[in-house]
Length: 324
Length: 265
Image 1 (cartoon, each protein chain N blue to C red):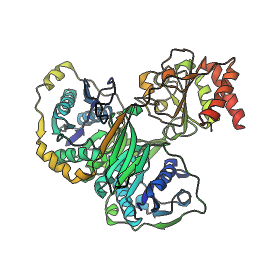
Image 2: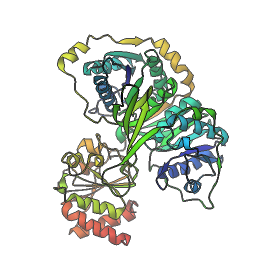
Image 3: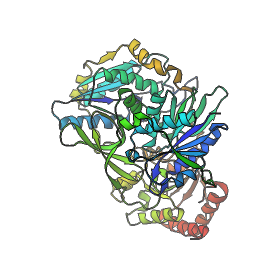
């Protein structure tokens, strides 16, 4: 019996999808122990209770609307003691991951982030695998027990189906310490420029375009294909440097690193600085007119051809196949 | 006003990765050690903040085998940092972020700073554990993934922007605090040759290794042990799709994604 607390992060309209993945991974780790969601911040808890958890503990005071890492860590430790649990999973989001190091120190646990595989041995140690060097290598770690704090790499674990009936929820007894640590003083939020569809770092499919599109207008073909697939749109540095699309689209060493289930590179030659940002994707498809383009070395499937001709045909075919 | 910057030595981007004989670590043979990219952003941010707050001093801290730590500290000095402290890794200590945090926490506590800056993660292990763990040890609030950091009306507060899912979050930070950088809003400067030469002779404070070992001790039983360092099976190149027309190529690809790769939505 080794219960697991899954820290849930609110996003507009629900809970970050990576938290659902964590709930599924938690079940395998808990070994019959409880899987408890911790929902921090005021608001509706329905979406949280439909995740694959046994119970949801809530900390819904107004002081937790923008929780600090210190507050999250103290609440997670309190939830783990209440559950009871020996493992805390933070969401692999920009804010969630910062909870790992802090909570490990506070709670006296071992720690690892961006985990892609995890198992527990008889001694209570966890064995984890995680990508390093931008996905160019992996490391396997043995994390001594009994307590562990982890975050999981987005999309490394399957999303379990929603549970029905919903789990029960009840308020967490708030320890003193998070009351004394101050919430984050948020002064504003600017949504990422452009980009309909899912967010680049969170998407299970990413469609990226490069210089092979030849003009900013043609880049619209990339966006149409992405829309037909429900994918996020990315770009090579050549595209963002040329100002065809904002810097927030850039996938690569100096942009965003992504690891979706499916990455489609259109008219991207595959400079090393782009490759390191997408090479850990599960399946990679490349379309490029140059049969010797380095992108074909890292792709699983390749089409040699002009993106301007292939992409519209692909969009039509995807729409047909999906009944759109 | 004191600013501390935490800088990790990592293999430079050109390094050819391969496991050592034990299969547990990167083979260090011939590796050139440089400051981690996001930590360079932290140095740049510290220097920019110093420019607009006269009297501020910036001290860089680095943990690791002493030669590596001092190499990156000299580059930090060449860029313009005022002082540097090296924190020698006790031989045999596993490369775990909790150990690094305890060691750096000790060093920073000896030079109390209003602001601690670091990168959000280093380009080798990409853990992101050290910054928030140092904040916990020093009793500071921490703010991650900052892309832009400015003074807000004096040197008591900062206004920062954080790159979170879906956009940029504006946050007001009351010091003291730790801020981790995702990317500087302008490109880090490069060091000028005379400064590089001068940095070769600059004094670097050393924290005695016995002190470092004592600081790490409370986490000693919790440190992760690396049991394998592996390269992915070499990608052998794409399976090329032969086709007679763009429509034919599209049909074949959709069929493959659906039936073979099983990633079609």
